[in-house]
Length: 230
Ligand code: 5RP
Image (cartoon, rainbow, N blue to C red):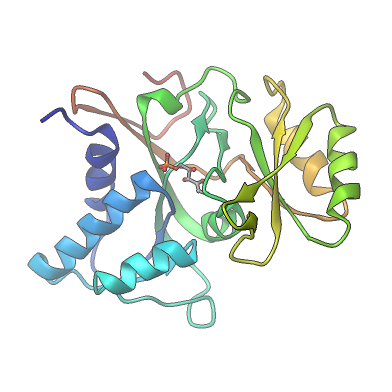
């Protein structure tokens, strides 16, 4: 069977987790493999951890696998979070939110000492922007929020699901904003989150501390310092 780069990266990431850590569980098809591997380590090695999930989907998976969950009612700091990304640039800027979990993902990342990002090679970009930028907005007046976002130079598409609007775990909507290449991700992030009606945006800057890249041949590349990957 051909190697699965997402699985390889996810499983490697789970090696960084030690006893008594508070662990952030990411969302998506790559984070899935890290969560499954953590559950295996709990069963086989008796690994003692408590986790905070970045989405209801990941919380459900964790519960099904017997991983114990905690919340910010009990802990205010996270030792390590393992999460995927939609794009990663050489400066460790990210686009996230393809799965619609960007608000909790950024919240948990901002509380984490180590933010470990796991991706396959196709997510590595010299410049961000080919992937439309997810922006979480409050339902009230979202049409005006879209107009304000479009004034920044994007085409903003309302995200739908099979049953109508895509609604986030926080009861909000997502606008997928096609800006094209992002010249200055940190500046754009600041501009977007400054718009009234925007809850959070999928540009993550200054949060990732380690990137693990899964390659098609099953090998891995890891970096803790910004620089060209891949
Ligand atoms: C969810 C995310 C995911 O991390 C991102 O979409 C990558 O997902 P996948 O690992 O399935 O490619 O940001 O909101």
